[in-house]
Each structure stands twice: as structure tokens, then as C-alpha cells.
Image (cartoon, rainbow, N blue to C red; front, side, top):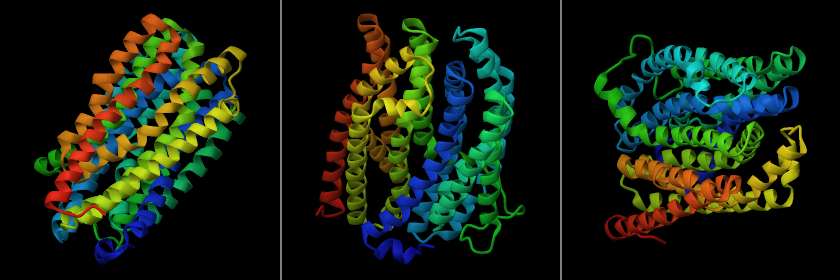
Length: 451
């Protein structure tokens, strides 16, 4: 456990290591559950299965967005209160989380099961792909409560000073998902239904383990059935604080929806499969960026609440440097062995492999700047400047990405689809850098010295 005193006195690098490494591991493990589905579907079902899960993915990301919104929203508020030594206030916020997650899960389940088939039908895909996507979505929506709980509780366990517990729980869940995917998809031939069922069961396991932590005596944010609340005022504060995280995750969903439409217009179901492989391949790097951002959130929030702005500055700069290093490694890997990366998902035709490699080599340039954008958005969320964080997430999608995605293919065809992503990322990066240097000036002048 990391104590309040250590949050204020340990070196920034030590705290970065103690919080960020487990956070990265936890997010990787949670995210890898979806990638594992892609690996087993690609090898056990084929390109039509990959196209089906790619069509379903935006709607799955909506559930992920809701869970992370609740988790990061409550975690940001709790970290600030703990930094101000308001532990009872932190517990009051925590008392609303379980009820909020359950209510959100029920709403998503009802809406998803009611509208799922209609939403899939909007894409105009073939009957087989549409049926596979529907099977996957039905199971995921039915189990949305089990998916929401670990996503919401994971950042709270870290804020409670137990980052290793969060990591180990997620690791156990991913191992369960691998075993179940092998049984359901490869041995029992349950196809996308089996892959989705494996994912829900794995998330349910981690939900049970993380929930037990907050009912135990070792937690500083203990809850019980008698202390659970649903206070509209606190719920709205949690949702408002978590709105940037929701926007970030929902933007992934919007991008997949937009890409699916454009790819079916300028390409084929094979192009959708290729985009799915690219998304799965690059997801590992995006999860590393998100892990760094989520890992430094308790450090930034606590020290900002305590008035230790010098430590906030150093943490922010360290996180950005780590993201650039990871992004550079990703560029090198993809340029050196793109066929090997794509081959993990077993593209079943040479055309799909060629399309995938072409898209990879163009989109990979985004990795150099994506992490910096994510870290800065999380910084503003950590200090409760929700508007700035929302601007970063939504501006990238609606100001840059969607216009480019609609315009470029009109002139460059499928190549234009691939170029839209790096162009949008670099334009948003330029805006974020202006915001970053303005923030450093404010901190340097009013609050801390930048070493």
C-alpha cells in the first residue's frame, strides 16, 4: 500500500514506477481480453469473423467508455479529496459507485438487447457477417454489468494504494479468457458467441475479486450494503468528472463506426477485416499510453490537491517522455516486421494481408504523438478541468478526424482512409502543445518551479 505521506515525499520516479507499471499491466490485461478474441476469431473463424467483431466493436466500446467514465470520474474526485486530507469526503463519493455501476449496467443491457440488431443492420454488411456481429453483441450487452464493474473499480483500487492488487486481478482475468476462448472457439466451435461469452465470464471474475477489496477491512474506502448510496448530486459530480474519459473511449467507438462505413463504401468486407487487424495490432500501444496516463492520475490528483505543484509538473513531463519512447519503439517494430504483426491474426487471403500492411505503415506514424495527447487530457481531468480534457478528446474526433475521414477518400480512395488518422493526430498534437506550454507558464509563475 502507498501511504499519504509517501505520495507527498517519495521521489516522483519512485511513485511513477509504483503506480504506472501496475496500471499499464492492468490496462494491458483488460484490453488484451478483446485482442485475444481477435486472435482466436481470426484463427478459428476467419476473415468474416474478424469483420463481424470489427462491426460490433464500436458498441462494445460504449460499455467500456461508461465503465471508465465512472471509474476515472470517481477516482479523480477521490484523489483530490485524499490529497486535501478529506478521507470521509472520499468515502462519501465511494459509497455511490456500486449503485451507479449497477444502474448503468441495467440501462445498457436493456438498450443494447433492444437496439443491437438494428444498429448492426445499418452497415449494409453481408448476412453472415451481420449475423456473427449480432451474436457477439447479444452476449456482451447481456453481460454489461459484469464488464462495467472491473472497469470502474480498477482505478479506485489503485487510488486506494493497492496498484499491484489491481494488476494481479486483471492478469487472472486474462488467463481465464485465454482458456475459455480456446475451449469455446477452437474446441467447441461456438464462434463469436463463444468469444463473447469467454470475455464476459473473465470480466465477471475480476469484478468479483475487485469488489471484495472494498468490503474488506484493509481498504481505506470501505463500503457495505448499508452504506451504499445513490445521491443524485454525487452521481452527477462523478459523471461530470469522468466525462473526458467517456469521450476518449467513445471517440474510439465513433472512429470505428465511421471507418466501417467508409471502408464498406470505398473498399470491401476484406478492408473492414484489415482495419480490424490494424486496430487490434495498434491497441497494445494505445493501452500503454492509457496505462501511463491512468497510472499518473493518482499522483497528479493527490499532489495537486495537496498544493505540491512542483511534483505535478515533474510527473506530467515524465509521463510524456515515456509515451514518446514507447511510440518510437512501436514505429520501429511495425516498419521492420509488419507482416509478422498482422500474421498474428491470421488474415486468410493475400489481399487482406497486403491491405493490412499498407494501412499499418501509414497509421503507425500516429504513435509518436498519440500518447502525449492522452496524457495531457488525463492531466486536465486529474485537476478537475473537465472542459479542457473534453476539448482535447472531442476536438481530435469532430474537428479533425471525421472531416478528414470523409474528405480524403473522395480523392485518394482507400489510401485516404489510412492517411486520415495520422493527419488528425498531428493536428491535435499541435493544439495540445500550445495548451501544454501555456499550462507550464501558469504553474511556473503561480505555483511551482519547473526544473
